[in-house]
Image 1: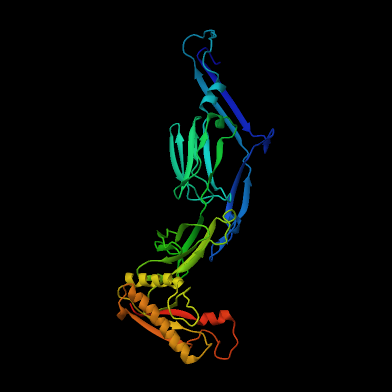
Image 2: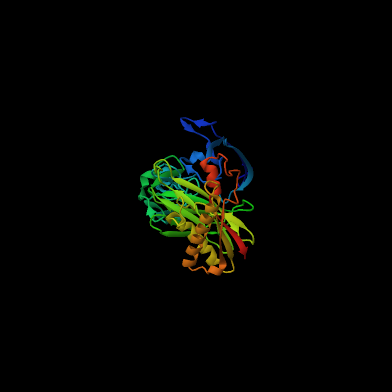
Length: 402
């Protein structure tokens, strides 16, 4: 006190944490991140998430030290009187804290059958002043909801029309020392998930905005989807089934790729992957039609070849100025002249199928080359494997005009 009205004051505060632990509890935060170690490069069956991701954990200590200092001048109004003690009827501080303690909420969604983190799940949280919706990321995490009041909340996830069981939070879940309430919910879809990528045949770069079509080989039911900004598309696949996938875009074409879930165990495998090449139509361009076969010494169109030719029909209809040569080739085994005639009959059969499905014949040329355009050295009299002979037995398309 300088006099009865003026006084000086000062203070110093110092705060520091007790190292890495305080009692039996950790006094630091841990940051964990997962890096992709094996990107998708071809059609594969993924058994666990570790086929594509490695576990890298980075832990950082966060010691806390602060110091505050202050000095000031105080002015006192009126006469100094002896303080009177008043009864404090306000609620105790600890009781108030318990009532208003706020928590963060973190929801993670996993696939029930494989226990893998599940992305693309819409998570809804409904409760006291909260109506939150978010979509899980690659690690299965929904967006964290910050500073929610104690109360009752209902949480549910949904993906592909299938919901998770409802998770209910009560005030009991808020009575913990942790600042974050962490909960896992499980999504149970018996189907497999196809993760595909559309890429440019010439540059090998992923292509966005490409329409794709998935066909169930047995039921012939189609589904379509456009690849996203990263060139990715996703379909759900029934177990023990075969499917075909093609790109369906004007000015472009793709092979008809075959995807199968036959022989796969859903409890071990969640994801099936596919790289779908998409190529531009250019005059004099050529490509081999994959997965089209004929029975031995026959020229009629097999049922499995129908799906492949249906894709050619779609390409022709989307590009009305397109004119093509459809050619058939044999291996070197058998009589040369007979192979030439057999290949011509096969080419004619393929063209007849296209015409029967609405393509004008003057846009098509059927050409059988027999064994005159072998792709390898398996000529007459050369001992080759069945796989080498198969390379020569092929159906090709050449763009005559576009």
